[in-house]
Amino acid sequence: MAEAIARDLGGPRVEPFSAGSHPAGYIHPLAEATMQSMGISIAGQFSKSWDMFEDQEIDVIITLCDHAADQPCPAWPGRPATAHWGFADPAALDAPEPERLAFARHVAETLKTSIQGLLDLDRSGLSPEELQRRVQDLGPNDESR
Image (tube, rainbow, N blue to C red; front, side, top):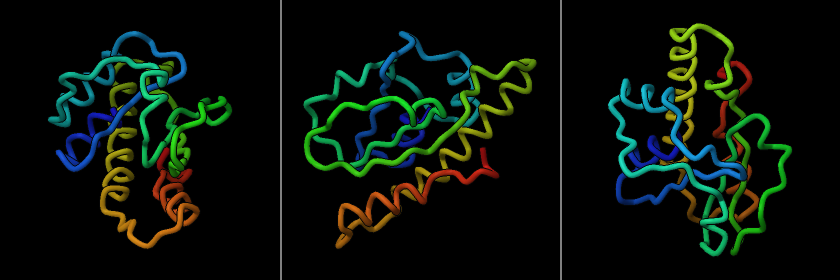
């Protein structure tokens, strides 16, 4: 969902990627339904491993899943700002479908707010450390999860 939201908000000025250490091999139908309900296209997206991007220089890397904060990440070229914006996985919620959809929509709306903040961030003159702190601060607080 984050890749689709970033593409929708940032347009041609950003090149977002979504990837993981153990990709599922498909985009979850809950994510598809949530993006469709928000009018955001996921056309062209597919489940990807972060290995696809190991040689690409990336400015900002944000991990999203609650369990991702404990996983080792690869060493990325350059000096990307990194942050963890922890979200519970809506697909893992043990609840009736309407509640899962509502929770997925909540996660997507919170992501949208954080991503818009990232896109609006004036990075000129920021040290790598300050950029990293600002990106981390843009993530959701405990009340929004």
